[in-house]
Amino acid sequence: MAIGGIVFACVFGGALLGTFLRAMLPEHHLSPDSKDLVKLGMGLVGTMAALVLGLLIASAKSSHDRLNDDLTQISVKLILLDRVMAHYGPETTDARDLLRRSVVDALDRFWPEHRVRPVLSGPTARSEALDDKIHALSPQNDAQRSRQAQALQLSTDLAQTRWLLVEQSGSSIATPFLVLLTFWVTVIFISFGLLAPPNGTVIVTLFVCALSVSGAIFLILELDQPFAGLIQISSAPLRNVLAHLGQ
Image (cartoon, rainbow, N blue to C red; front, side, top):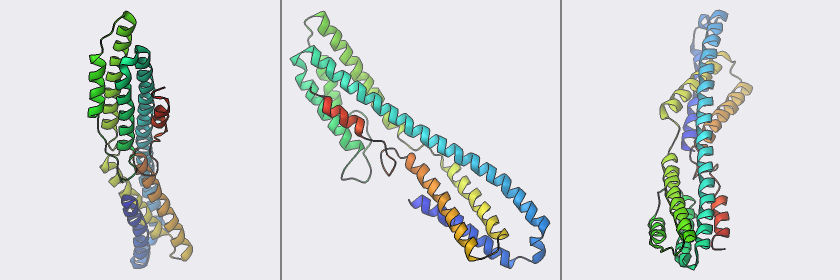
């Protein structure tokens, strides 16, 4: 929200600056030839700004979708792990209980109800204890040995995917791109104010356009914070897992 406000202030302030410069510049600086050159230059800057904006949107959306896919994979593996341990036998009751509590712990960390930002971390002590309990099982037949091996593999995959989720949850938006885009859009709006006559309709139009640009930047940054904000990844897959665990 703060960055979106800064972008809006820069862009709309640039438009007002252009309006001020229009009144201050000598008349020959605003000749048709000068205006044509400004329009050509701003066309080039606008094209570059559009390319960078598209790159930022693609990067943020790709990162958001990738993390959402990782969460779906984790949810599927959690259910598979629980079913494998259930078929192993009653010896896995404690391990299955630990698995359920680790899911509750993950929901509290990634989607906190009473904190502004989530606490992102890798496998917790409960997850490691679950791995130890699976290792401690003493299979009595080939079927149990096979299911123990499956459970160990799933547990390892879960830990790997969770670390991957944490590592990929950082920002995918490069700050220089964002700063450069803001500068280019500000320059474009300065040219708008410079070329347009200063009246109420123009000011309102520039205000709405500046608000739209800052809103686009805001949404990009929201996509780039998958576990916080307005466009966060849904916790529904893990909550669905909780409904199936222990059955």
